[in-house]
Image 1 (tube, rainbow, N blue to C red):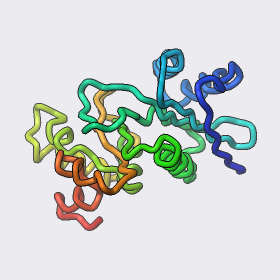
Image 2 (image 1 turned 90 degrees about the vertical axis):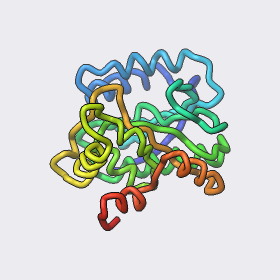
Image 3 (image 1 turned 45 degrees about the vertical axis):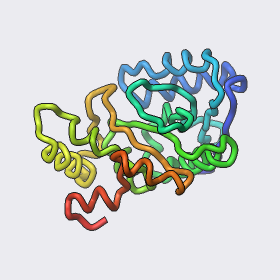
Image 4 (image 1 turned 180 degrees about the vertical axis):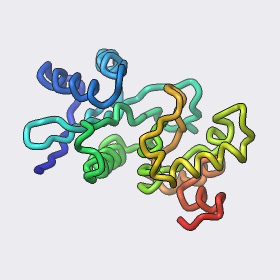
Amino acid sequence: MNIVIKNIWINDVTDDILLELKVLFEESYVDSKMYVSFLTDIEESHKYFQVFLAYDEHKIIWIGVLEDKLHKNIEYYWNAPVHVKRFMVEPIYRSRGIWKLLLDAMKEYAKEIFQLSVIFWESNEIGAMAFYLREGALFHIPTIKSYSQRNDPEDNLNFFKEFITNKNFRTYRYPVWKGIPFVYILDESIKHIFIKNGFMPRDLIFNIFDLVA
């Protein structure tokens, strides 16, 4: 396996790349509208937009996108609304350490080229969230507490703990379009702003549950 990470701007997304991505999107999710959504996004005007592709030889096996996309339900605290989007893989390439290569490339680009202090993200996939926590993401605890209105906040926290620590739930997904927000801090000088507003790193989250990180 010879994995290479490449990144490209909107205008460099060729028809051949789109054909490969269509297959990748359809293999990653059942009945997903993400490919159509991706086509819509690349037609829009962007200040920040970069597609990251992982190749095995000449085959695209993983994609992640950095793009500016304002979400009305997210507080950005005066930062650019740049999100990680479309982070998906051909299923047979899961659990091979490739997504860390891709994620590290995206974080480095966001910090060094875009000169961002933070990038925003959300997910409803338990296995992915467990990985992001290990890789230093800060998760929004108020969202976790209020996720299911039929449970009290403490129950919702305990369910989240069980999900991310129990391997039997690694393929479980929360309801579609209702993800848990989290951030990657690229400039430590602003980290306190997000912690003050309810975002927590893995060690603090695990302390809530009296677990050892």
